[in-house]
View 1 (tube, rainbow, N blue to C red):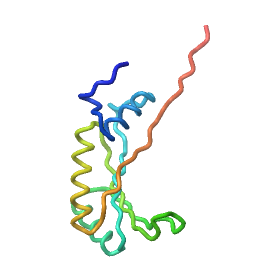
View 2: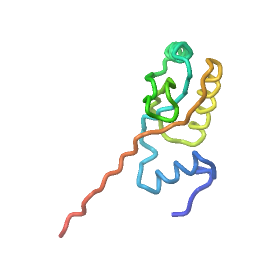
View 3: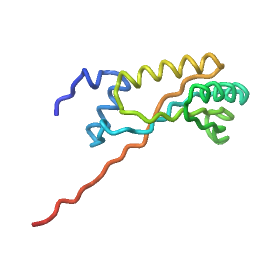
Length: 124
């Protein structure tokens, strides 16, 4: 299939969505997407978390594993159930980036679980 650059622009998000589509993901089905914001201070992360809860966002907050390169960072994930459309992803990245900055954090990207099903064809 030829890539539709209207639906899958030539940027990081478009490339990822195109790869998911090529791998067989149904992008028309809702996915739970995690948008991450990293904080150096727990207090900053907690204030941002409270702000997002007031915005009716589903969140999780944890401290990065102490054996990682980015020791002691607090990671705030915002869980959004959505159809994976490029424009919506970009808009949410911008919004979470602005909110992260407002509270002293840094937007750290998004991810989601992709579900691939291998259907066995019936032998006749």
